[in-house]
Image (cartoon, helix red, strand yellow):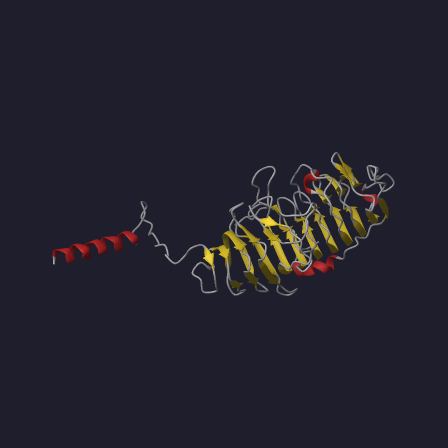
Length: 401
């Protein structure tokens, strides 16, 4: 009988301790022993609406009826699918580099919004700011320059391969805001980063707003993006490197008149053939094709280059428009096709217009000639004041131009 009494007391003591309080009297919630950081199915206890994070290993749907709060890393593993319903809003805790969505090689994301029910991923901060959270990273198996695979800039995730038509899913009618958390001066998240993403992936109707680094960056791969809006990216609007061969249509980049953030060399386009210009002998370097792109600076902070293509990259760009929207806006170069690590290739072609009246001198495009032993690129810019992309394309975002 004594042993039984002692055992009962011990059990009671444990129960009190497990449901007790901390030093300031706040009740302590017991940890669910079934939670392991893995989301294996829709009924997994790790799938928590107010605490969305973990490794997705099954087929998971984020319903539009729920108020999702992204509190950490949400990683879609090989063989798993993350579906985000149209009209879903996900609010990311302002946790910097620890809060992001990553789709790993072999994983799939289906974020298929509509014009009347777009998907929005934004900051949960009361006063949201650029850099509040990381952003979205998709890692595919499409080729990168030099062949083989590589590891992402910000996470130990592999990308690249031999599957040019690799399919990582669908992104359509999606708004992504306040991204770009910085790890250090050399490593930072972008709004949307596509690492070795293949042409089988469908990406269209994307708005990247108020990011703290590049809005979108392509590391190799062959995916195309149509109807792409960038507003107030602190660094580059459109960035590619490491053998990107995709492209797209209707890209619109804007810095608004009230935008005053400063970075070292913000650009409309920054295109490199190989990663950081450190592998000039790589085969299969970047060479995308873009139809209709408008790059407009209305802010008082000078942009370094409106278009910069260099380091072994090619590009075929038609329907370009480059503009400074008021007398206070400026850019050091309209088009620049070289730096100390190399030039754009001779096959590069840029055709479009620029708003000469706003200060861009189309008769003296500085540094546009390419003569690095490979010939000269073709740049044909004439005077014009009409953007090549209609802002009505992005009316679904609610952004006022």
